[in-house]
Image (tube, helix red, strand yellow):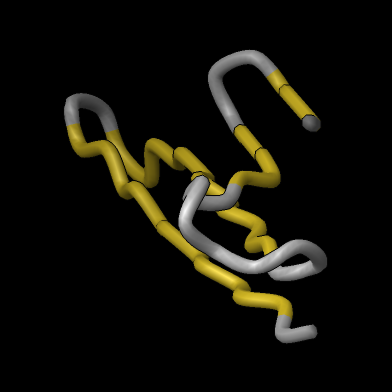
Length: 49
């Protein structure tokens, strides 16, 4: 897991029903391009066996 407070969360996860060796990474990035406007970018990367 990676954490940059107020900017970025990166976490690996998997469903219990997925076969061993199959996991994914979720990246959530936060940006404030102007006051009171929050831009959230979600990236999902799935690793295959």
